[in-house]
Amino acid sequence: MDPDVEQACHELLLRLSGRLPDNLVWRFRDWLGEGAASTLARVLPKTLLKHRVDLDQAEYRLMVAGLIPHGADWHQVSSTLGVDAPSESGYTFTASTPNWVNSVDSAGAVIDATLRRRPEVGEVREAWRQERGTGPEGAKRILLVTAVSGLPRLTGELQRVLRVLGDEAPCVEVLPVKFELPAYHSEALANSRFVCAGAAGAGQQLVPA
Image (cartoon, rainbow, N blue to C red; front, side, top):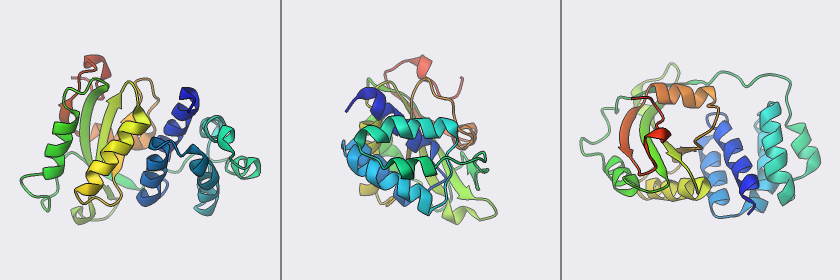
């Protein structure tokens, strides 16, 4: 796949975090990581229309750049362009691990072992997300990673790891180095904790030391 097209698809899916159900977002990212862009191009536009998720101009350009080359329907794509700014996230984030998570966090340990000193990985952080007005029993792990290459494939790899460990719809946010963070990711990072670092250097820190 053309790297620019792949990057456009990846960034679009990042911007849809928290706006589409988790079980759809992880599947779309899995397809992209496996190179199934034509499937993504066929399904994503009509999914956005079904869930009434409007795209802003920047997101629309990403969709055109990423999905039209793989056969997306022009009419469906053009219908996703909205007039309103994306609505406020319905979530809050915390760095505190919920009490229901075992004191020995097997998922956290595996993530650390998988990503520590990886050459393409910068910083790895973790936040817990919950819907506004709800208790911590429904909190969801959000994994935040910077990477300098292979972002869709790294996303797919980490999703598969978390699914094996019991998370059926993992939330893995692998962020490019130069990326204007949506509010969803900014809020998650502001309320996250450090997990580990790869070997890509201090310049890839998500949160300044």
